[in-house]
Amino acid sequence: QVQLVESGGGLVQPGGSLRLSCAASGIIFSMYAMGWYRQAPGKQRELVAMITSGGSTYYVDSVKGRFTISRDNAKNTMYLQMNSLKAEDTAVYYCTARRSTNTSWGQGTQVTVSS
Image: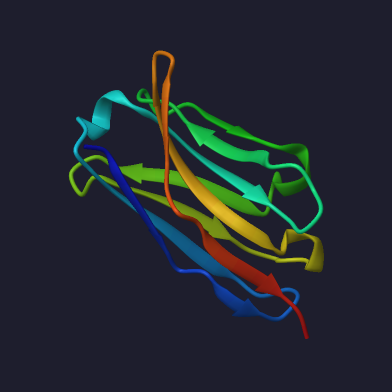
């Protein structure tokens, strides 16, 4: 059974930084494309960043240059380093693991950017 557990969310001031982690179990982690989605109140869920099994990365335009996605296959863990945070980054952030047509989701972690 796939289990994805996010951590690292919280309250941060504008301009601050947070690092999210996603610990995976029940899968051969290195074979999965991993991603971060977010959903802000009243908005649709959006893909923020993704990293393939080969290490290629994708970022939505709004976070390019500020966020960095990475993975540690030895620890079965994915990260999202978020710098220069803005109020509009406030959302629940979800971890995903995808292989072929199957996608698993974590429960989410709240990120709030506010002064």
